[in-house]
Image 1: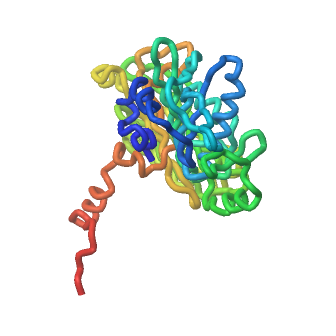
Image 2: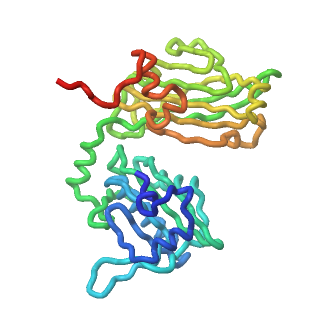
Image 3: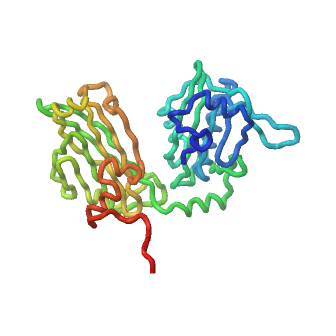
Length: 346
């Protein structure tokens, strides 16, 4: 859910610092879907960060929600035991980047979460952070050996029966897939991009079976090798059974070489795209996608070639970017578009 649109009436990219100030011109209170956190002293940063992570963990284990870090300082009105937040913001003077913040979250919460979106809104060197958290398909998550939940607008340690229910709700293992750039060289007319792919099972108590993956490249072609379980096409490789059983923390790894025509990618500002699509018998397909810019074949760090990456998205979220849409695929098979409604009348 787009919580920023829900609370502010704007998409995140159009929201401003002034919009957040205007939001708090009226009294606001917390709920199971929104957490308001003030920030008023650099000495509090580490403790506040722990509280933010705890709240993210709780939203993951509940129904998702929004954290506004840098909200006004909450006060208790006379005769009320519920805080209200109104007036001047308490912004942070510490500038955080999306990557550094997300890395902190994934290092501290287990299993590693996904579906966390981080936005920074700044004014004169001060920053307010909005953090959207989706309900997790892989809960329960824990932070510092505790499971948390949202209830009555507060974050609390989850009781045993709630944690048990969350464990029973997990119906498939969580797979994660990544691509690593190992090397790049040239034969004069082409760049040869050497890649490794990795697929992890990050669910401790569930194995997955018959692991499948395919890799696609835009503006390049694969160099075929003799692996018996692979099928190569010009811009795609498919592996029908990469591993019979995928255990927790025992990743599959494989390697490929992609040939990039120098003249062709030069016309596209030296850019190419790579997709890793993967899944297993018990898990849904996911996609990790990467946009590369190959304008320096000897960088200090091969990660510098990555312009953009979005990893471990469910395949249905991005499948239209790499293949015909759901309806187009069905039309190709049955010769017409599928009906959206059941219009048959008896």
